[in-house]
Image (cartoon, rainbow over all chains, first blue to last red; front, top):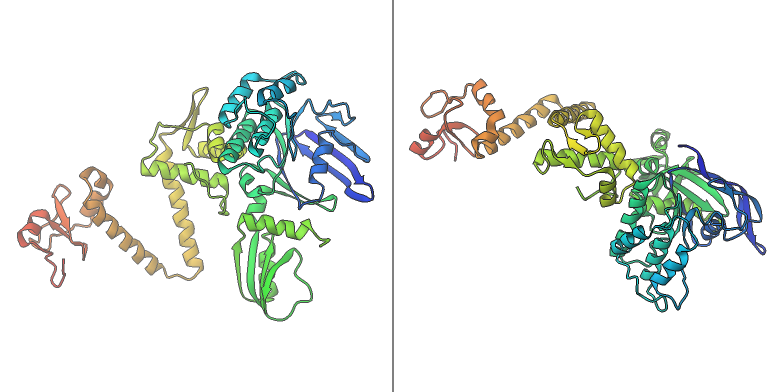
Length: 295
Length: 186
């Protein structure tokens, strides 16, 4: 059960002079749901394309379900991929798109397609030309899961969806999770809607993974510390980050619950208070801390 | 059940457990009722099935749920007992918290007594069967009616003063039309 379904060793990718990914090594074990957290332009989409074997890495080894990326499309048969900007042939209807796609996959499951379409309220006869963003997203979701893949690569699966359709897509995603040991890598700027689903959160920044933590741990050990500085500090305590300050009053946060008593003991703060950090703030803080040190 | 607080720091599986227990206590669910399957509940709450499974497994170990192979998950006969156990634990830890903060035991007891008295007076207005577990207490305390000075037994119908929580025989109360305690406004 703990075998690695996705394995990356030393993956490097640059576009011209600009280095996007630098020596990334990571493994995803079977049945894990990984949330990829990064700010814009930090290489999320590039990583997804490399995983789906749509882009060739400059260097490094990529293996997905034991198949290494060679540009042959063997990987794409085994994974379900939602691109950041789904696009389909303009002259087709949703049904025709699905029919075209079905030819590429041996396991294409039409009963599942019809069920999914009904669940997420997707009209099979709507035309791709001038299709709304919601229709595109929903079609992409059906395409990604119709062949019962073992891995889902979801690059912003819910962007552009209204709350109702978003919920229906998320419901069917959870439905996928229950059917088998599905491995999922998902990126989303509204990570809070996925909080109950994720097992792990990975922070990607400057081309490498800066931080990797389990969701449950993250939720339970994020704290906000407020208080008044007794005297100016040379540097913040290890593992503590500043969120804001107002004169002597500081707002700190930490992702490690063991740090709270350390700060308390160090007596740096007067009238110190500690409260759990709401998850939305925690994600933002995580991004601020690890996501953009070049800013 | 269809609500999980994502902002809260309480673990999701703990939230599921608490909700199910609450629903049994409130009577929404009853012993022998079937609870949603793991996929159903996961989908409903948009939660990772692993979390739901964890909560259910824990509830099964406690004896709150039992699994009937191929049929589903049901609320076990022992469920009420596990709730009591859980409450006992919570009360104990609350008391520990009081003690570690230097909150005097006498005040804890007086608060408990007051809550209890209020609880009894409220329960008395409910139909007789729901007061069953509390009637024992009334007898053990040897409650005397302040008007006729005779014991109020379990079988007597009684009225409790809203202000001073004193029990009267219902007939006595009707006879004087007010609380028999001197100075009480009831």
